[in-house]
Length: 293
Image (cartoon, rainbow, N blue to C red; front, side, top):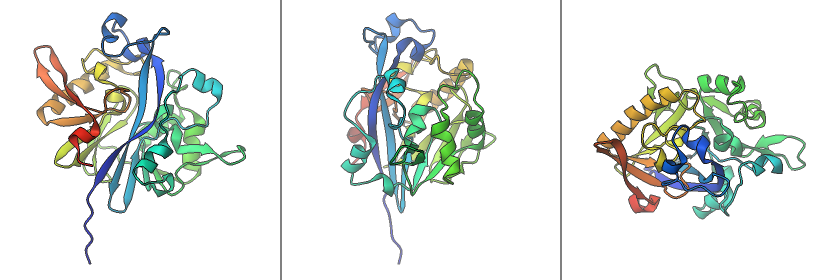
């Protein structure tokens, strides 16, 4: 007997936090970037921790997993978490539990993308998998980069988020292609590798309901980052980010991509268009305005 499965995709809200607006926009003056990303009195802008869940046959794939909750109050005091959304409540909204997750695909290993994969054990004497039945996916180049971090990124690559993944036997690697684009990766979607923000960040491209849905991670944190020079101060190779954004955004226009925004606190999905000034924002949508539930 043949069973036919229909893929379903869900936005997963794991909470919100704040980051310094100047760090998020690099050399762009505040008078410009605050038009799209308003800052509070401390120069902080709202950021989301929006992940993606893909239900595909017998696989339940989570793309990124937020910060988790195991860091100290002092640590989180630097990032001002706010809002009521949690990973567990968001999964439950669609009838799932974290134990149902079969695969966790990490775009990269900065704490706000991977911290939720590892949690304290019951008596807080050690760490355990947050997704006990899941494989965790990274790639060899980025794993080496994260486990032997440079001084600039060291504060974002936290050992307690990363080392237990391998120790628990959950670690799996996505192949890194020579042309930085992998078609039909092991989890069934294509992956673009980009290197401006960090070494071999992975950008999933999903064919869904007749559209190309792209999880843009930190290649494009918010709609305010669409203009090419609007590059985060966190990027390790900002000039390379410029080239990568140029190629990606032009392709996004030409091939009608729908961009799933991980960090934009106000917009879930956007599209882009060509203008005399280059690629710019076209439209923004909620997920359910574009895709059937």
